[in-house]
Image 1 (tube, rainbow over the protein chains, first blue to last red):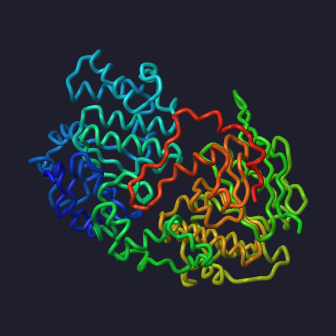
Image 2 (cartoon, rainbow over the protein chains, first blue to last red; image 1 turned 135 degrees about the vertical axis):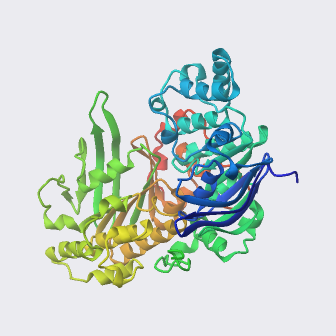
Image 3 (cartoon, rainbow over the protein chains, first blue to last red; image 1 turned 90 degrees about the vertical axis):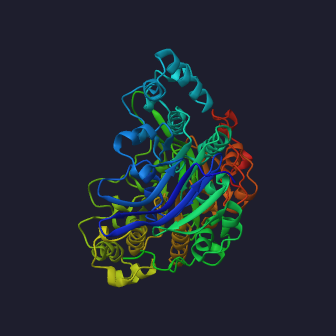
Length: 280
Length: 280
């Protein structure tokens, strides 16, 4: 396998005396989707945020995150903003929160492109139309003059993806990109992400708690719990031959894999997760 | 055996510049000891239905009958005692629990509603243990619990009123994926132990399948398919149900993308097929 595009090595993130990420190492490869699974509070989102330096100032971060030969953790604010959106882009769970409600879609798409790619107005506009066409937003010319609230949730997420792709990033961080969407809309977004990863040779980090989504598009999967990666491997290894007890418990908790839940009277009073509340 | 709840030609409208007909003439009934799931995507009218059932929404036309009597609209006055046998569980336990009241006292309110109706008394400890929590936690406040635990407390409070009908509007979607199936199973078990019926509203078909006896699929204010859950799951005949089911990604590790419907909703989704209703 070729050298990874992004290399997270021994990443530890703490807030005060609490370590929320403890020695995480992950490699992202071009054209592949690396999944990061886990429950809320497992540290998966914080891990993704740290790549772009989006953590609050109170966080203490050690380890290294290498993009090519740059260590992102050592970058100052100004050099980091040359990476953000340009080489590493991010898509969040809630597109209504990541789009500016008072600016037109065209404004948000072209601003970004003009700033990073130094395009003129006409060039930026045609780039914006091309992007919206690619993410299959209907009637792209017309969409440029409209505001986020005039689009449905699924279309807003497509627009957020278009903005993320505007500068041809090498890495795309996607934090629960389909969690807020209806299942039929989710399916469309998953197709789009999968296709984009392949055709643009993107290294994708997909953070999700939804193992169905994970199974659909991730090539490799890492399972996080209490800030540690408890198991990682290819998608087949994780889903078909999980070795860690926690991975097995997570898979068994999916209603799909547990048709016996109902027959067994669904004994939920004793979930199979030892120390549910985590370490204190 | 007569039905616990009968919904007849229910219409719910929201007036405005354009009147929105959220629920467009639906019929449903629930027998004692039966779990009926109402599923559909956002905006299909399932929550409006739930609100109309408990009297939080005044129907435009049609009727909601509980044991043969029309459910009175919920106002500022205390409801007639007999209607406290109908209890609701909401999606967000943060808004349904009182943040300034100890959870034991809140469960006690439910017990008071039961005894006022002449039902047998009980203690908060019994209920909190029934949902899998320890009775030593009764003198804590809601913020001292995790989201999943809070939802269990909200369920305990509803059950403490010894309802014979529970209306649950997305009771598990705010929970971690790993505890969703468990809490859903728990609700079913407790409901059946008490001989109560349940209207379980969800957008997640895979969970519904394991806990509901019957399922009704709602699309744009109408029921498009209904009947035995297992039949609908294994052999859907309405095009919308088929699209909904095939859009669910399965955690099987095979990397199969779920089928994505067209960007524009096909007209076939809105067609009414009499043969798709009341399937056995």
